[in-house]
Image 1 (spheres, rainbow, N blue to C red):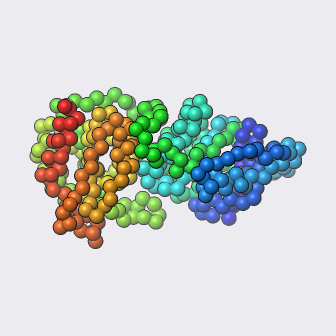
Image 2: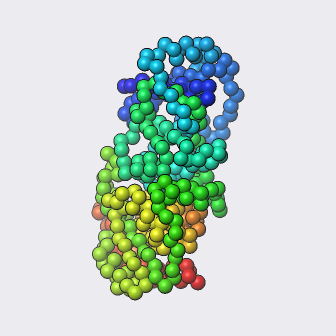
Length: 351
C-alpha cells in the first residue's frame, strides 16, 4: 500500500490516493482544497461514479493551514506547471473504450481552449502496461500516478468527465470536432493525411481475430474466422486486378502501423470486435464491414463511430448454425457471400 499526495489547480488542490494494485480507494482527504467555504456543485447522472466520490472526499482548509501543511512536507513537493487533465481508465486494453477516453480528454482540452501538445494527462489508475498505452501516450503527454513524485503540486487541473457521459455513447447524427480529433492524433504520430480513394483500385484490409494476451486476465478471443486462408484466397482471385488486400492480426503490429493501415484503407472487413474503433481514423467515403456470428446480437457502437468519420458501415450476420463452432469460437465464412458483399459495397461507394 502506498500513500500519494498530489495537489492541483491554480490555488493548489491536494490528492491523497491509497493504492491497491490497479484501483485507488478514495478516503477522506483524498483532495485538500485551500478554501474555507465549500463550493456549491451539482452532478447529474453520476452519483455512483468516481467523480462523485472525488467530490465527497474533498477536505477544505483555510490558506494558512494549507500552506503550513505544504511547508511541513519533506522533501518539498515538486511542481507540475502544465495544464493537467485527470482521467480514470477502466477497460484500458480495449480499442473502443480507449478511443472514447481519448476523445473525452481531447474534448475537455478543446472546451478549455488548450492545445493537446500543451496538456498533461494524469491517469488515475495502475493498470499494467498494454499495447494501447502506446496509443494513449503517443497522443497525449500522459503519466500514471506512480510516475510522479510522492508529492506533486499541480498549478492547473481539471477532471475529465466520466466516460459514460461521452457523446460517443449516444446515437447522435454528428458529434463535435471529430475531424480535429483525427488530425490531432495523426499529427502526434506524424502520419500524413493525404490518402485519396481511387475507384479503379482499392486498399482492402482484413482483420484476423486470434487468441492473444490483451491483459493479464484475458488471452482467449471469441468471434474468429475459421477459414481465413480460404477467404483470403478467394478475395485475391476475385479482386487481384482491382485491389490490394492486406490481412493482419492487429495486436502484433505497433500502434503507429495500425493507425497507418486504417488511415489508408478504403474497406476494412473482419469479425465484430473492438478493433473497429479504429474505423474513426479511416478516410472519408470508405466502408467498414463487420461480420457477426449466428449467436451474436449486433450493436450500434461501431456503426456510429464509422458514421461520424463519414465511413459507410455494413453489417453481415451468419444465419447458418452449421457454420458455427462455439467450442472453438469460430465461424466459417462463405467466400462467395463476402465477394458479393464487397462488390455491392464498392458499388455504393463509387456510384
